[in-house]
Image 1 (cartoon, rainbow, N blue to C red):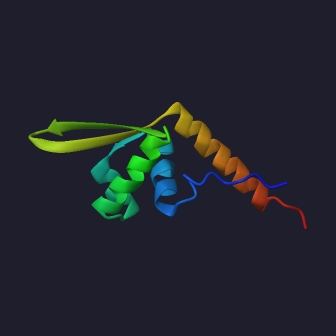
Image 2 (image 1 turned 180 degrees about the horizontal axis):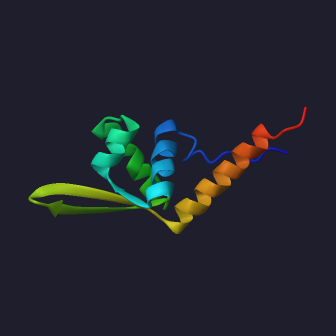
Amino acid sequence: MFKELDPILHSQLRLAVMSLLISVKQAEFTFIKEKTNSTAGNLSVQVQKLKEAGYIDVTKEFKDNYPNTTCKITHTGIKAFEEYVKSLRQYLDVKK
């Protein structure tokens, strides 16, 4: 009856990152760090997990001689997020 929740998205920080990227499509690492109130180290680990899952693309470049990392949600990430939300709704819409 219940679909299994995606373990990649079932982490609070990874879900927060994906929720942000769903609305803005792409964002700089510093923006995501600020919005999620995360440490750089923890966010970096979680971003890497999302990247390995194919849910986001990560671009690293220099901007005014400073490293700049941009995260962009992929088509796979959008579909995974939509499925996750759909699965959550099944849990919430159960008739008693």
